[in-house]
Structure formats: structure tokens, C-alpha cells
Length: 247
Image 1 (spheres, rainbow, N blue to C red):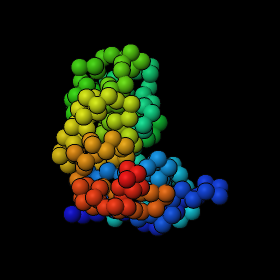
Image 2: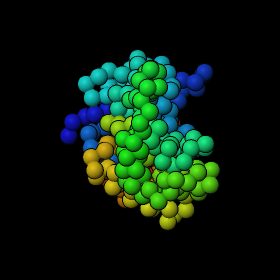
Image 3: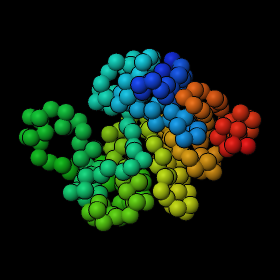
């Protein structure tokens, strides 16, 4: 498979603390890769470095055949990255549909004049409904965000990310805070999205769901690469079990 994202020699320091040291990660087009490791391993820092939120000491980052190492975040997003957050941050003054339609109209709001003279939002709303159906919350489209439970908001976060039509969907602990039933259903939904050809990189601590839905694992420990490969094979490695499971 073609490599769609390549991160090489990623080193990040916060003050005197090294958060990532010479980390390498590649993502193949169309695969579902889970990025795992114990708390403090550097997983979120790596994704934030890829999106440009964190400035590394050193890193070579490529999206497809483009070097994105020195690009600002908004240009990386336009090239095809979308990141969801563990703590959901929807626009509370909008309905579910309006939240996703706003994201779907990202091309129109790049410049002020076209966004002001284009009043018709029917295409964006049509696309938004499609994304809401993909994450199975279309029935909530007209409801206010503030009145909905976490399980629905987690799915909304995924729908908003999909609405910018990314090459790669980066998910930061999408199952966090959900009960086992909700987590299993959302993991199934994410897997279904992956099967539709969307490349996914997911940080997640729910190991049972990670093993069930991932194509490949990449393990970090103390800011360094520890292992990568097929899920069961990786989890059978003694060093991974020691670092991640404490056994």
C-alpha cells in the first residue's frame, strides 16, 4: 500500500522535558492504525506535531508527496488532515446539523467575500446529513447540542471532522468517557468509516476495542517507538506487555 503520511525523526521538548525522541511513524493509504501506549507516552503530542499545533525540535513530515513540516496548521488541514479531540468542543449555539454544515462549508469561508455573497447553504446541509448518517446520529440533526449526551457528541465530533473531507482522520481517544456498550458501537462505526476508504489514525486506551477494529498498531513508550505491526503480534511482544499492561 502507498504511504500517505510519513513522520520521521520527530523530537519534541517542553522546557527540559523530552516528550518525543526520534519517533518514526508511517501510515498507509486506507488503513486503520491505532497509536497506543501508557499515559505520558507522547501519543497526543505526536498527533499535535503532525497537525502543527506543537512545534518540534526536529521533524520531517510528509502528507502524500508534500512536505508539511513547516506549514501552519490551517494549511495542513486544507491539504487533508482532520483531528478530533478527546474533549468535544461543538458550537453550542448551533444544532447538530448546523455544526456539521458549517464544517462542510470550509471551502466557502476561506475568503470573506465569497462567503458573504453565497447565501445558499443547501449543498452544505445535504452533505452534513450524509455525514450524520455515516455516524448514525441523523435523527438528532435539529436538536441543540447542549441538550445531547456525550455519546452523541462524540459522534458529532467525528462527523465534523469528516465534513472537511480529509485524506486522514486523526482521532484522539474517541471512546473515552463512554460505557462499554457505547464504546463498542462507536468503534464499529469508526471501523465502518475505515472500510469506506477513509485512512484513520486513532489514539485509544480501550485495548479490547483497539484490538478488535485496528488493522495495525504503533506503540509508543516514554516518547519513543516501542513496536508496530499486526495487533495480536504486537501485543504478544514481552516489552509491549510490560510497558502497556504492566505484566
